[in-house]
Amino acid sequence: LSFNDVANFDDSSTEPDQRHLHNNDQTMLERFLHTVEAHPEKLAVATSSRTLTYRQLDNLANALAENVSSQICVGENNFVAVYLERGSDMIVALLAVLKAGAAYVPIDLSTPKERIQVMLDDISSYCSSSSISVITHSEHSSSVEDYNLLLIDQCPQDPKNRQPSEKPKAADFAYGIFTSGSTGRPKAVPITHANVMNMLDALQPIIQFDSTDVWSQFHS
Image 1 (cartoon, rainbow, N blue to C red):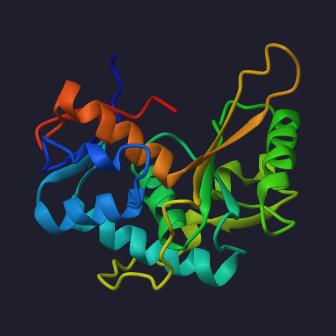
Image 2 (cartoon, rainbow, N blue to C red):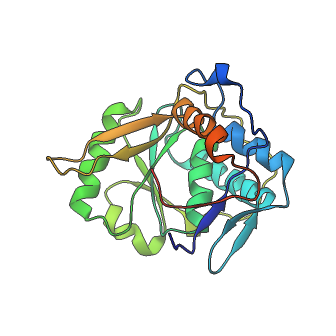
């Protein structure tokens, strides 16, 4: 696949403890922070216009997480939609939502406004809060103007090396995806942190990820 936006993934363990498969108590955020600590100056995100090391990515996500926590409703099993162009800002926003203790719902900019409403109405049935907020850019805000918005281009960009206090648990939702809707309305599917960690750990003996691997930003 050919994409400008790529993210490196690192896992220092090439032989995961098989006893933890399908019973993983680690979160996506903990796995990311482990990599930040192990490889702070390694390339984490690369786009056609910007590169970020793991330390830079973590600090930017910390700064945005403070805005997420203070300006919109977050907490375990609450979803925040991320309506941004594919690129480094989107990666920062996804991490910021996790750092604020919530789960993210990525929405493609090409999605029709009516479908966005259907998707967010559906995912809201899984939320502990009755409202869903949206992280977006000012130039895209008209498509999601009916929701509580956090405009990423109006948030302070000062990097923070202080980690937010919220700590998601493995059983908490990490993000939501949607079925294609080929048989009717798209259906929301919440994914937990444990779901993702089990997948990565199960694949590790086969694919053997390490700090030299690159994943395209194109999968569910």
